[in-house]
Length: 321
Ligand SMILES: Cc1cc2nc3c(=O)[nH]c(=O)nc-3n(C[C@H](O)[C@H](O)[C@H](O)COP(=O)(O)OP(=O)(O)OC[C@H]3O[C@@H](n4cnc5c(N)ncnc54)[C@H](O)[C@@H]3O)c2cc1C
Image (cartoon, rainbow, N blue to C red; front, side, top):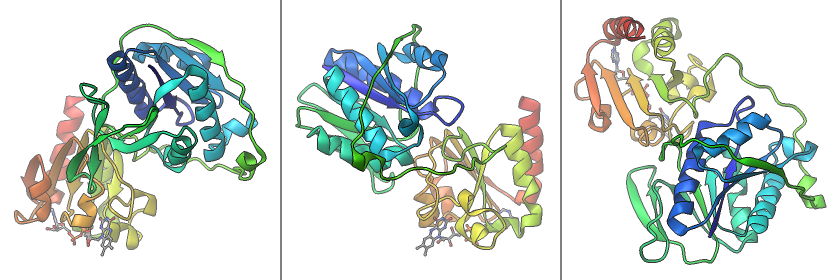
């Protein structure tokens, strides 16, 4: 029973969520008794592809060409479908991303596969094939059986940690022809953010709220983020008031994050904010109000004035480094 795993790059290297997916797919392959094959769409440095063997991939298929360097959902879907057919994949694993969100359903429809999104654990194959998925913005889990011959899974961010096992994998080119419909949309320009850690990919996120009183105090948060190697986020009012850019707004109506560590500073913990962070592995809350709702969702809490706590925390983080 062959497994196919889709990987994508952040522009310079293969994303951590993709490495996690390769390890996950390799474990699925060993459970169902097959090989873990990877499909990489677009141009990648050869050594990055062969290194996927270190995460359990047996072989890598690479589809290249201008149309495949465009982050196009249609072209990516066509490549994944072609690769799935080539290796006879019975399970297709897709790491959660904006691009994957836009083509996963198409892949499933064309492969006549059942699809389950937001999967958080390895499948249970003791009686059929069932997976656990996160639902209600991380507040509950559902166990879902996939009864179709081919199964498509999208893996939730940071739900499964990639492990290096040693080994390299052979890379093979795959030629995929696109239909007229697959090339109707083209990316004409890409402006990359520079010098910032990507919020959705960061292992540590430090986020600030209205407790900061104004943008002039944001340096305290940036200092802590720098000391920890963290990305920075904020609550919605903070971006609404233009203290911080909108792409940093975390929550139900903003970016959803699932880092290993989320530090919330001067944020009350409204349900709409929690909806974007409650898949984080560990939540630390700093708030001067012991009754702040965020403490109920926290693994660790500091009741204190952020203007006193943050400088001390930053110094401690620097010492640890
Ligand atoms: C439809 C809808 C969608 C929404 N979507 C989002 C969303 O995606 N993301 C989001 O964040 N919000 C969202 N909101 C807004 C949300 O309901 C809250 O209003 C918002 O999260 C509150 O932001 P805050 O915690 O920064 O501010 P506040 O609620 O004002 O809380 C500030 C906190 O800082 C603490 N504080 C103050 N001074 C200090 C100090 N010196 N030291 C330490 N702590 C201090 C206070 O005790 C307080 O808990 C949405 C609301 C609606 C209606």
